[in-house]
Image 1 (cartoon, rainbow over the protein chains, first blue to last red):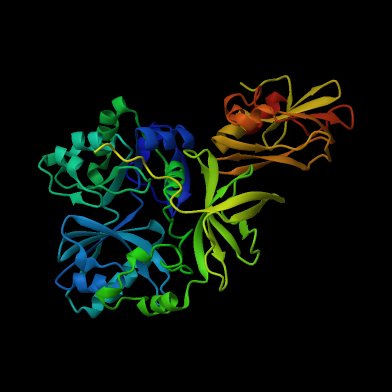
Image 2 (cartoon, each protein chain N blue to C red):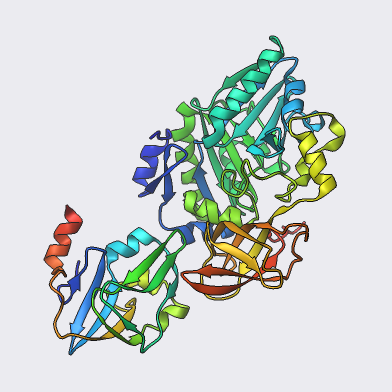
Length: 374
Length: 125
């Protein structure tokens, strides 16, 4: 089991650890509910250094990424990032990822820890075909990643790494910061919680200092360290998919409500033909959000069934108590045959310990953060 | 501090016996392991249970734990307060966070239950 460079800091903060994608990760410190609330109301800080960072560079880097990912890397300007994926020929998810454009010949891919080896293999294989025009480097082990999320995140991050961070637009980033201590950080306005927030990529040897600085600066406004437990409830409320759980090699972006990452006009990419056929024929499977109306919690592996169309059913892929909503919610992968996806508001049920509990299909996300005053 | 006025199971439940009745709850260790409790499913009063059978479940944000009764009997009362305040299981597992009160089929505790000292020793081992 691997540990991140911040492991000792988590021990000091009283973390409880659990295994995740081969890493011993902090699951919670004070408690999932308190950490969840801190992120929604103030700020929370996550060590997500288990994530993989893969650098793709060279004159053919753009062409290679255009061929491997469904989103349009060509539309990406320097200092902008985009959400995308690596798909199989069947158009299903091998991984979901972020693509950072450092310059038009230099990209940083941020991938899930569990699929990092597979991603790397795919990229390296594709690079061989480019005959020296692309270099692929796995920088995961020398890179740590700290996410600061919540309505107070901007002031904390700006104070620590530089005022320019506060002016970042969503999915933009900074690097080569003026302060020497932070010169090698990459700071992006991104996250996985549904709140405003930042992700800071740092050389591993700088991670402990950065963690301590952020914690110190954030103390006054109520920043707390938060674990993977809260990260999971936060992302679920925000309707964000977890790769390997909600989306996997049996799921396409079209089925997952992620058709916006598929750019048809950009040319060919792996999985395109399969997706084009699916667009034509319709999706048999759909990932849908649902709320639990009765008393109980639907969890991963339970089965959701539509009341009026019992043939339309499927496994719950994510399910949890949503602290901000005060009720249980989930995502299910329904097989509705030719019937099409269920309308929002449709009644459904899930069976938990032999008891049928009422549910209702709802649009994702479950939670949307309040708009900031302009 | 493990109260010594009751008995314990290897599954981290406690049982307090009084006048042919038993109050059942989970230990402080169990609530810590579970994390924030958000929902408690309890049986209906009057329901009968054999020793070792499942009487309900405790759902935390992270996980679900079934509640088993170590004794045979019928449900006299359940802790209604947990419906609106499931967090009582975390905050006061040996007191306000009790789960059910049962009328015992047989007088006297089964002999596989542990004293507080024995339970403490199990936790330490």
